[in-house]
Length: 391
Image 1 (cartoon, one colour):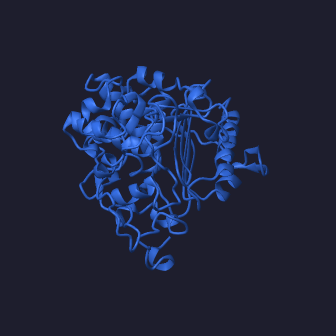
Image 2: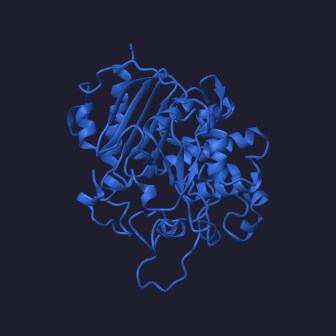
Image 3: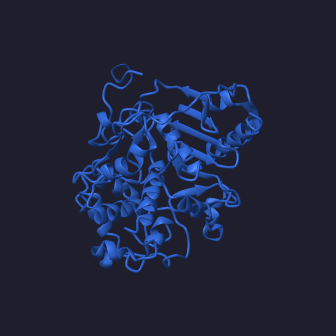
């Protein structure tokens, strides 16, 4: 897809919206300032191949019986890969994407941040039960006062944060400006945060007791990013490179978008290739290890699989009736050990240790959220597990 042929000029305020996201999600570094997450000088971790014809596998979806091929064709797919016991069984690139294309992860990035925090906890650099203000004392004058690191990991801090993506004046709309993704609305003379740190400091209002319920708020992940940087004295891209990306054996360097202060957007600004996202998913499915190397502590992964369904409210249960959220990962079914990473516009990693199956789908949906598409991909995952059960 040629930007010159299709989009002579990407609107600065609409670069991440349809139809422009069909191009922009694979070309973020041409739009925004970024920082490299270096892959290191070592070899890439091996992914063997055992091809399996998944195209024609059929499954029952809400719209009727469809094939995996139809599922991919109809859901704005950019890249799709399936691993079985560490081997690539199916890999497809669409919409101009190829094996070296770095694709925006959106909130899949949150799970990478959660994994990094798990490593720092294991290293005893962080205490998950300590209050956030131990690490970021400036937050004593915000609604984060009294919240623990674990509360923030689980998005249970109780801090008021409006996550309405379509409202440019919501809190997450302000994040778009603070992160450098967008300009403030034309003609608006109110104060807007110039950086992510400035926005965190404005969060003065609470809406629930800390630890009482799960409520999705992207800024929580950035608070974790600031904690990680503060205790290590290292910027997030370098820290992610050192602790995860190099040890993962990534094929390609990844990158983050950065705000005007140089802070990497840990909640959604990570970009990487399809196979490298698959390596991350494989590491999670294999209890934090890949290529014989333990990256994330196995105990942290085991704990992450124990989500509290009771704190998963009715709004979230519409698409995940048995869902839970813990340590920046989703569980579609808290009774099973599979973990998922989800991002708006259809970004998805599914890591299932029981079946040995890892699925990654990179997309450019026309809408931020689409319940029907979300449920259909869960149905597709179940069909893939069944098809490969004896593979």
